[in-house]
Amino acid sequence: MTLARDKLVRSKVASGSETPSRTSWSHFFVKDAAKHPLILAAEGHIEALFGCAALRGPHKPLAKIEALQVIKYHKGEFYHEHYDNRADSPLTRAATIIVYLCDTESGGATAFPRAVLAGQASGSYAAAPAGASGALPGFSSGGGGGEGLGGSGGGWRLPPKVDVGPRGVGIKVFPVRGRAVVFWSKRPDGNEDPNSIHAADTVERGEKWIATRWMKDDAQ
Picture (cartoon, rainbow, N blue to C red):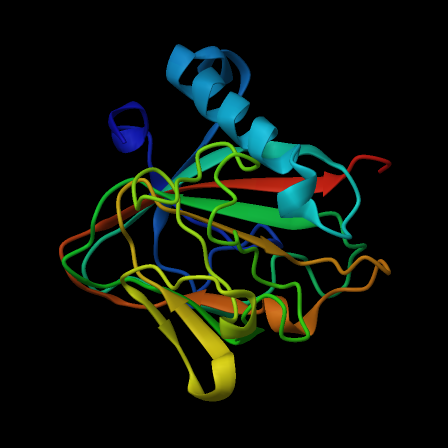
């Protein structure tokens, strides 16, 4: 947060334009800024996470694409429903990780209106089964560091400040410092997953800070 605070500019959508649908502020860590020890440490954790077959499941191995982005939402700011890939371009962003850098007093959830819990017909939302902390870097079965999310049939637990809609359809993840969300925009068959559509709900009180890293298929 400190590294980005004085460098924030109005966020743009995937087409490179500023739009009323996205009202946050952001900064990409490129060139020398990407070599800062904190950024290198964060990138190392993300690389280790995506290197785990337990997390990746049927998806292809991944590699980094674009730069790490830090985003700030003030009270009243939001990002309406969107996909991470442009509608008129190839699917370059295969997966996304969102890391929450602070707690938010109220609002600011990341909403996946079509996503379903892992194991219930979609791989849009990554999940860690209870007890899998040894397989996933940063995941803990004790509630610290990382959190699992999954369907009731697999015996997985639902972390606090995560809401799930009727019959397990629709997920809202509220900002908690240190929490991370991983989801796939690209299905294993190479098509975009329509369930990956998501939004940043309006921040009602306080502010919201996140870091976002996009990943591509390693073969791209």
